[in-house]
Structures are given as C-alpha cells and as structure tokens.
Amino acid sequence: MSPTTRVGESDPTRGTAPQGITPGRYDGQVAVVTGAASGIGRATARRLAAEGAAVACLDVALDAIEAVAEEINREAADAGGRAIAVRCDVTDEQAVSTAVGRAQAELGAVTNLCNIAGIGGFAHTPEQSLRGWDKIIAVNLTGTFLMCRAVLPGMLEHGGAIVNTVSTAGVIGQPYSAAYCASKGGVKMLTKALAVEYMARGVRVNGVAPGGVDTPIIHNFGPPDDADMKLIERLMTPIGFAFPHEIAGAFAYLGSHEADYVSGAILSIDGAITT
Image (cartoon, rainbow, N blue to C red; front, side, top):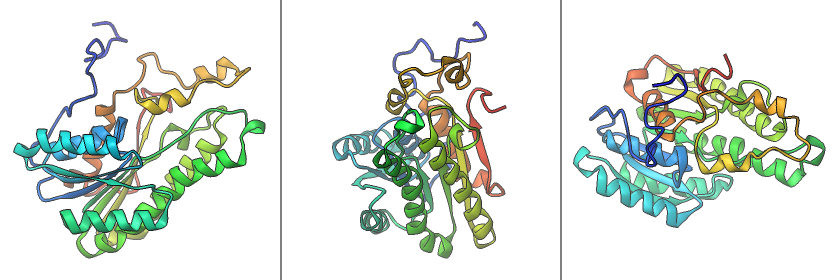
C-alpha cells in the first residue's frame, strides 16, 4: 500500500455503510441529526443507529431523509436502532421547535444532537452577495444556535451531548470563503461558549472540524474565476478527501459516554491541513 492509498479507496461503495461500530454504545439514547439526507449527516445517523440509538433524521429534503430512515429501520433493527424522518429547515425557528418536539414525542427525551446541516461555496469577497452571505450565516451558524437552544431545556433535566460541525474553515483562514469562514468561526465559539456554560450542569458541547470530505457539498467549492490556485492548494492534502464514515466516527465518539470528560474540544479531521 502506498502512503497515499487509503483503505477502501478502490471500493465504489466506500463511506456508504457504518464502519468501526461499537455495539450497544448508544443503547437507550435518542439522537437528533441535522443534514441527515446525505454525506456526513447520513453517515452519522446510520452510525448512531447501528450502535443502538433512536434517531430523528432532519433535513429539508424529505424524500431523501425518508429513504435514510428506511435504511436505518431495515439495517439497524437487530442492533436496537430505529429512525424517523422529520423535514426541518434549521433556519426557521418554529420548524426547529416543531421538529425537536416531534423527536421527543415519538422517540423520547433527546440525549444527543449532531448539528451537521450546512452550506457553503467559494466567491471573491467583492462578488459575495448579501443574500448569499445571509443564507450561509443562517444555515451554518443561526441554524446551529436554534437547534442547540431547542434541545437544551430537556438536556438540562437529564443530561446530554451536542456535537457541532465546525470545519477547518472555523479553525484557519481560507481563501474565497469569507462567509463560510465567518459562519464556521461563529460555530466554533458558540460551541466553546456553551461548553463553559453547561459542563457543570451535565451537558457537553464539542465540535468536529473536517477538511475536505467526499460529499455532495464539496461540489459547491469550485474555484471562482481568476482564483489563485496556490491559495487553493493550501486547502489540499496529499491523501485526498476524507470519507463520510470517518467523520461520523468522530461524532459518535464525542456524543458517547466514552467522552464524558470532553467538552469544548474541536476535533480536527483534516489530513494535517491545520497542523
């Protein structure tokens, strides 16, 4: 195996099935996963269910999350996992409240929240529209805040864990990404603020900071016209993109009781880009 060849790289189904499962780790847990229709969200929902969780799969793409929930109910039943599909726009305050209420009513008290819904793209800053800026901030930062706010009252009664998606864009500056970096930098500090505020009250809050991941959103990050490719190369790693299941593993660990002493951490999974 060459240094740049990764396990599963030649497999066209890589990242589509839960891997590295710890059986029973999420027995009795109820998880809400946003952005569950595809990519990291789908992989995380399936991973938690494979470890025994009841999962509320949230996304704006109802048909897609219904398919994910069906996958989970078919594949994870023997492990005690199950799922429901809930359409939710995380930028809509009422929709978030309704979705969390449905998860609690149908599955039980929410013990885990994985904020994975996100959007982004490259743009020269003078060409970044205000509408585009507002949308990126709304989904990535405000959506994360609204979801955290909705689950916190219940978690303060019975404990819980929140894992947010920070991205390398929330850790280091990236070219052509002013809106995306601002949104993810905000998620990073929101994560740390909540961790400090609630650790002593039984709620842990952590973040995962992926680099490039082989998911649909990566196609939104094509270089803008006249981009300086040397700047783009700063974001690349010689081993290529991560697989969704690798990022799902980080969400599964940080949300589990194995990480009971971990709060306020930002776990980078980026092939050493931010090192």
